[in-house]
Image 1 (cartoon, one colour):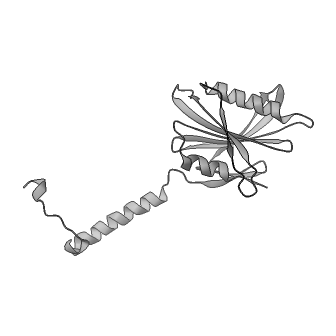
Image 2 (image 1 turned 45 degrees about the vertical axis):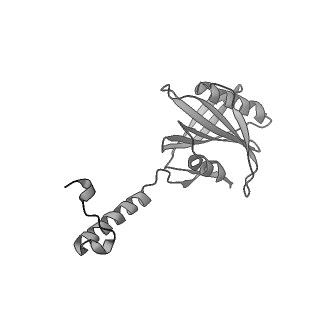
Image 3 (image 1 turned 135 degrees about the horizontal axis):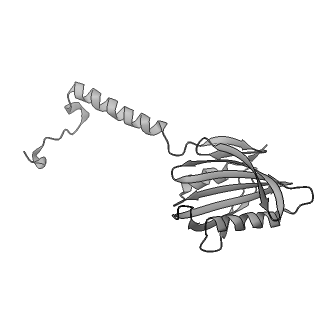
Length: 187
């Protein structure tokens, strides 16, 4: 018998009861598995006075860094999900230190690390609730394995605190970017 001659059941009522129950159980199990294992499982994370969202359980670390000739302590929270690397970082400036040279040095270092192919493109991100309007920097380059990567960065200054959101992926999609950059809340 050819495939064209196979009988096709046009509705569930034409499938025997035992087969119908099995088909419904298989469909329900598929739906349950899809609903319980999203690639981006967003959760709240607190880092040094800011609450943000990450799409996976983050690792957290601190390390000393030198930026703009300043010795600083960098706090980070980050994780990898759905092909993207998500990170939130924090630095506290010493009294009287200027923030903009530090942010510029941080951005330059990020560009060098990813071997960016051009200057970053800056685009505005509208204010949302208590979050002020921000600038998102976009760049393309390569990751440490030599593979193409896109990046999106935001730096935010609040008093002496500098916060940095970073997203790296081969191709950044809206569902990766929007929740990550839009859910920041100050504590």
